[in-house]
Length: 616
Image (cartoon, rainbow, N blue to C red; front, side):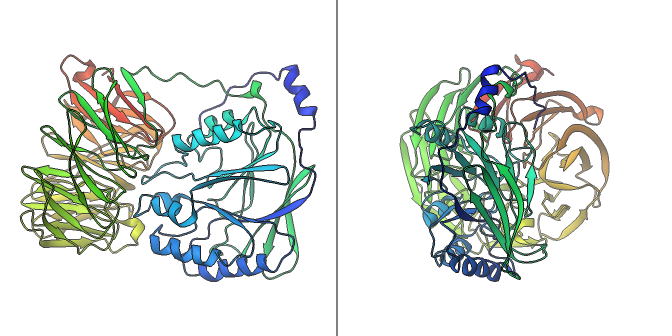
């Protein structure tokens, strides 16, 4: 979180601090469950103990469930935890955490179906409760609240009859360094009587100092790494909020924190935000965007979490047409001629007319489709969440073949190399299929847990080898014909960001912190060419690396564009900070009249589509 700049308190705001603003007079208690992690060994017993303890008490009015209910975010695990929570004899309200938003076969759609929504608001004994899901959607990054939910929070606050009503906010991530939109949320809260923001994610009790907001992190329900199983009980009174830890080995409540029940934000203390570098144009979509935009014939096409697909003019950013799918669109569109193809979480693959956005055809699958299509000639190749990878006829959308031997869902982009379709899935496997009939040629696994899958990385290939990086920290080179390991390296701490030079001779890989390195694609062992300190800090955004005109381009989880000189061992040529959130893989448009010979088309996690020209 960037450094905040403060001004002096005005007399008015000093007086406001002295005014009693709480309308709530009746003391009450509620239980707070966070980080349940069903799918881990101790989680079922830990949750059962928590439920039984709450059910045995008469002083608990309701239960708030605050994210990471599951370990893998699967529909089956969500059903399991929902079935257990339904045994509570008190009302409960739930939001999702990063384990539901990052790893989700449904694109986080099933959580709302199971629990009724992924946010909630209600008033209890004079206190307004507001909670939203916060997690990097399908990507690795900081906590994030979608533009749609930000608007919902704002409208919820504005709809309160009494602006001095005490407000308690809950979300999975803390409103500080872990949340990329923290400043925007706090600024929204400031005119209102927001008492506290509860969070989980860190699995331990902690008061987190922050200007203009009181952050309280609470212990996990799952006992792994903690001395014993337990949960949190919070008491709200006219003058204070008291936090108790309830462990199962004692009937006693251990009070570990008490904070005043009063307004904590002062608008004159709000930060002065730094100016955003001027783009050629920017367009605000309705929801989160997790994929790159695609450009063809002067038209820019991209989808968002609301299911809208936007077609914008490349030169002006003005809308040409929009199309509304029945659910979210997280698939990067593919364009061939006058046709646009993409998948949707409504379980369909769509083909639209590029000129006017009219539907040409639709193919229905058995689950969400988050994979990016690859168009090759008369065939569309695309994977989904129903354990199937398919080939569809580009003309009419009819099925040519399907391979349904996957062990997990797909969100990645396939490549076609050496007569093989190659792609990763969230099952630890990389697959190679025959593009003519879909038959399996080879499969390779890193043998790790599902979270370590080579599934968010788009593979690159050269000299008969396919290269991937994965959260298991390995860079791997496989024989493209057989899938056999040529070499694996942990020389650098890598994750999911990879690219290849224009001439195919160099593989670029980005590390967790600051460093990008270059390795040769031809040798049959790992041979490093150079590494460079690019100064981007800690980063886990799976933005793929690209080279154009001798320049290397990538983006980060905190809104940074970086341009390096490929011929000068990765020397930093230009950086540009657009915002504080994830910038997806940029789309490079070659233009001899532009600065640096390219224009960069970008999309962000907060729903911005835009165009910039790098200075070098």
